[in-house]
Length: 283
Image 1: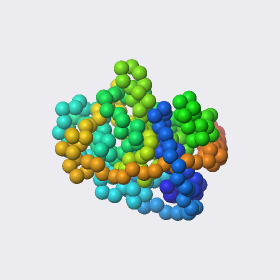
Image 2: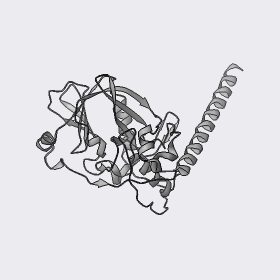
Image 3: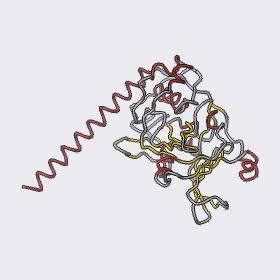
Image 4: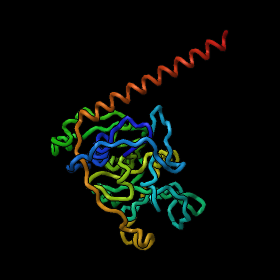
């Protein structure tokens, strides 16, 4: 997880990967592996649609080319379907999410699917959607795995450290929250693969692109394995299952504090510049 001008070392970046793999809510859990050694990089090659961007005063890093090979990138494709335009179709086997358009095409996004995400079979709908959502471990998570989630009992505010990434779509069924989410992640290597835990994850740049086109109430349809094999052929079943990481809460909260301080400094700088411009205009 190496970013241009990132303040994160690979050690902290790998730690965040573990949190992102932990997913968002009740169904999301986490395994343990060792953290890799510290390394840094100053330049990242990427595609224009995956470049760094400012979003809600947060500097979102780019997605390096190594994670965008082949079909593992956003693509507009021809798509024959009886599904209504605006419907989301998820293929958990080929690791794709389709947003259906009204002209015989669809936008195809690569995704990561955790164990809990693979358990989603029924049709749902987008009951809520949020930008840079905060994350809070549930009572069940704290009770069942206190060694993993206990250090995060106070939750993580929206920002680059949040396991839900830049955007989240909250899936409902029959008026109730299913606890399944489609959300962003900074665990870049997970996209196109399966995780030991988690829901349905996307590159942050992709989930922002999707979010802006999806209305509350949009249907979310899960493709069967039979249909995945018929439609995607050799792409069905692509990817591997990746292990998760456990992480030190102190590292995460240290990053959160630094990010919040930087955002506040930018806000004050912007307000000062606006005040100076207003004063100059009135003189």
